[in-house]
Length: 89
Image (cartoon, rainbow, N blue to C red; front, side, top):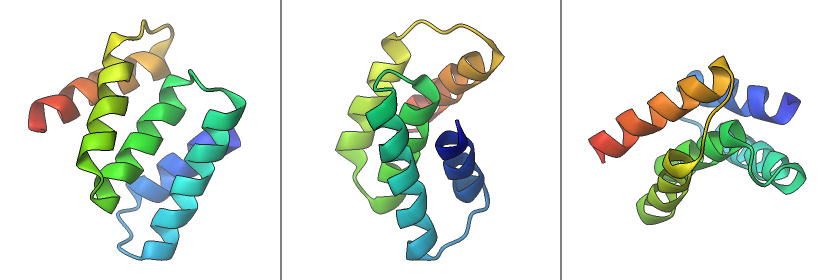
């Protein structure tokens, strides 16, 4: 849970430094290793990929999130955020 919340906080800070982006990406990867189907971790991972310019990979992850069922407020918010990102892309 720490990895996901810290990655989200780093990405929400809009800090342009690459070290911060790499840190968030590493945290999202670690969270996905522990829980491969964690919707929140997948979203942070996709956000990192978008910032790194890996649009096609991020699109695949966002589409996977879109197909998942959500339970709870945090997952529902992540699912709606995913829909907005897909619409923008």
